Length: 418
Image (cartoon, rainbow, N blue to C red; front, side):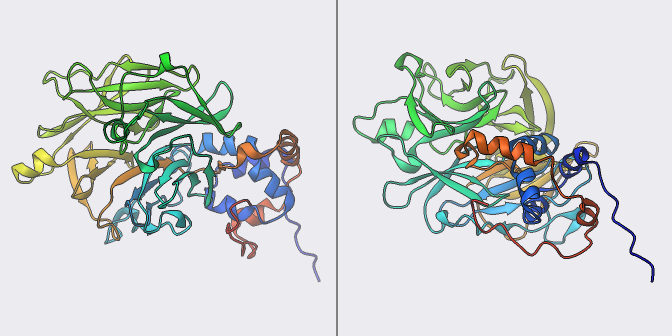
């Protein structure tokens, strides 16, 4: 009887280079293979490497205020192919229906707002009928963490943002002045506070650095270029908006020039496409120009999206929100009160996109699919060093794992701390 052919062994140093291309869903299951695989996949060095090489893997999260969140998520894709596959009701072109995110039960039947996101972490404020909750949540790995509340916390009416400060290698949650609180809460004193995850405590920035603006509580912070951005009402022209920037490293505010526009329209939307800051003017024409900036000074027209044919009321009052690019170069668009569409630049055509399971939503958030844990900053330095050393002792049955030989993966990610 012939001996079985041995599984080829891999050099230890190329194991992380292979795993870094796999989707989060697979890596979450792979953590259960052994202690050494768990150490590798949960190490900060591997998490950051995986995030860097998987920027195009994203989720569209739809917040529904007093209802569960929905996810329109990616399918497995070839490497280097951005970004998104969303399914229609007829499952054309690889699109799928929206699914409920049951792993985040805190929001069920409660008012909540998404305030911002960064590297797969989403900042959510929940009005639970008591003091409220400020939460960091990663839907890809099903982990969430309650953050300490700042003083005089006003629940969902507050304004927050989330970003990564590369100068210290840590995430920051920023509390900014709220327009609602300014108008409705007696004795409200606008101020800015910052929570660094590593410290897990709030600290106030000097009063002289507090901006002379307040922000609408339903606006999400846009994270790009090492900063957070919000739209604010101009002090000298109440019906005009300006772009307010908060530098995460310097912790200073400034006003960013708006994109050029011959019609002197307001900027009505801020967001990101492929990691770059983007803006759209008030939409009163038969087309929508999407502008992008990498340096806060120079704006470049990224794409012009024509309106879908329809009655005049629809043209004037439907807000277009570009969400992401698909692998074939089309732009997925959210249309206020109407649903979704795709725009194909080569064909110069906008097509209606029917997504099954989506009847209404309040906010849309496009966040990275990542392994970043909201608990990462809780780990002592010694434990992180142990993880990095353990990353070089992974088992060598990688061929079996990648090829799907054997049913190793019956475990799930139910424990939020695993």
